[in-house]
Length: 622
Image (tube, rainbow, N blue to C red; front, side, top):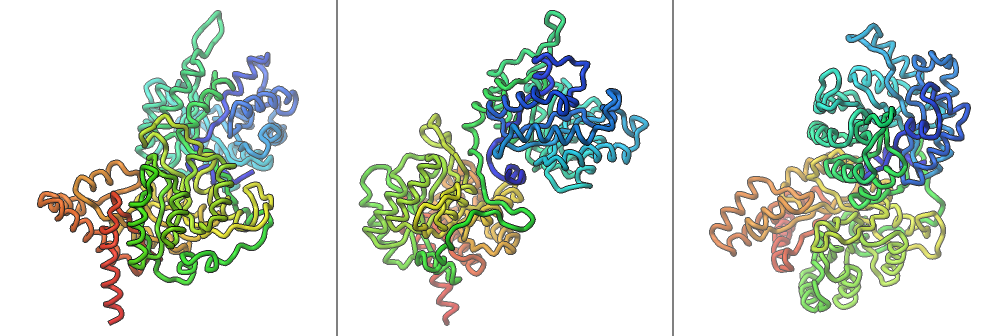
């Protein structure tokens, strides 16, 4: 199984399973029985339920160990079988999970009051948690889930207990009441802050209430922590029907709220009491369009990379002129052009001739930026290289093709002489003119980087040889201004491990921000090409700052563009170029190169930005 830290770092929304107790009861297991004992005696029913959830699309299975701690097992005379029960639970879940579903060691509350609300000491609670966690660890879980906790002090001891014995990721989930607080009065904000400080890798809520109450609570939590968020609500509140407690929320109702929860920032979504495989299946269908699909990247275990065999890739300096300059430490220059909206590329090609004549190293060709419908980037790249004779850096995104299509495309690119790629996840269709268009997202940019790296070794994504290897110079995107920079850095690290050889940034308008970012990634030794965009006007600056994902325009730059725009269009254009040139000169010695965008196809503006670079070189020469 892949390291669960990948799941935390990537952009995919993961689907948990649903209730175990509800399902066991529906299959005739009476509530006076110890459900945890079924892992040892009668595990066929547990295995069948796990398999139903996997079939429904669950990507994380929780072990049937909610009450498998010493205190809760003792009343059933099972305290001495704690280790065997937990290990068996992992084995049963693993048999259903196979190689593509994570197994989470489920740990519920101890069922007692701990200090200061009861007689049990914190250290004692920690030891009880540690005992169960050690058994689950021995069984081979991929992660731990501490769930349905009402007392923050109790769940903190659970987190500490797991950290005592291993470094596996911990999802910590509290439970709240109808007023949005725990029974001890703690708000979602306090929950998030305390669990963040305690070291939980993922923070969330589960049980007790339905998704409506959790929606507001999750919104409050996301504002209080940068940790990833999980949510597993009940299927509404139970109602008394013919003497039985019934959960009435339909799969469609849960699916609608699952979509809202993901839009509020939930990354791990599932169900608790009352939810069934049908709920999980419907919830999965609802959230699937909102995120890239899972990326299976090469990970390292115990310092040893687990990679399939293949030929040694061609040296980067031999793959392209662009690759050679980066490998040799020479400063590279490129201008990003936007493919035409129609089928006539002549105007664009004339602009590219100007770029070539100016001595720029390459042309960047974006792949459907902001989900706009334009000429295909691959066709444009081939036209540019064959008609104009300048190298291209092809942006290639995961949005529009499945794995088979991407593999075929890239083999075609290699045959047509396109050797420089920038691998990106891609903007979702909802940003473009056809928001209802279907997105594929079989993998994201991390998975795509791994795929292209394998192709350079003559292997497909499954590790199967396909013949002569490709010779791509592999670039990836990065956003120095990401609102959660730690998250962005983790993703960049994964991209580098997957095979990225250089990175190009989102448009940067804050040189100090870029410098801080470069300082934090020095240890990666990954060449960075700075993305620079000459602003056209104050309105253009507002658009970039508010409507282009990942782009931030500082206040002083906004003010400069406002003043210049008040004086007229030409003043605004000159000021936009001047700001871009200043940014380039400031970071020139810190980056491997620069990519300047040609806004609205204005190649002349992009070339003016390079005037600063020419002046700087002249100063150095003199």
